[in-house]
Length: 178
Image (cartoon, rainbow, N blue to C red; front, side, top):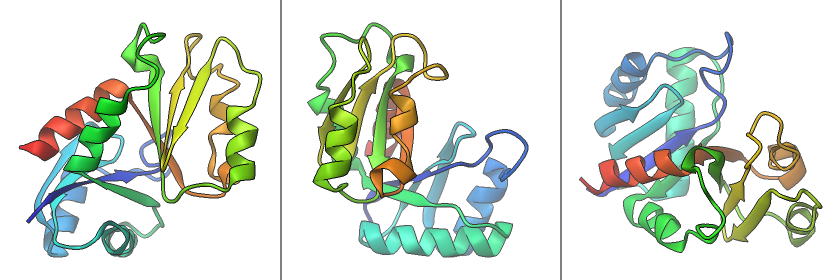
């Protein structure tokens, strides 16, 4: 079975929507998902599944809601897709710190109008590049003070958005590749 990476949005931020990684691994394994592993506390799950990404997203959302009592949006990418995200790396010539270089994974491709509002925003020295269902963003002044980060939301893009820094994406790709 192929390895896939499930990115959970909005868990373990502050005191709400807390999920322990051991409990998450156990719940997903009990729901029948194979070789469930996690990375960090921010909702990165590597697992084996024969399901297509969209079906796996829905299954994981149902399983997490059943186990923990609240809804958690999930975005899935295969190991091959994550490798391509890393290989593309459109901002490498400007990035000086991978912790401030974020890949936003989207549940679907946003509308052209939504993308234009983000990619056309005047947020220098920050940068953003859209490619399919990923947005690559560079936040040299930090993410918490970022004007660009405030544009990379579900509400503004019309799709589920969950971001990971480039270092985390590289680690997830490694773990998914075996």
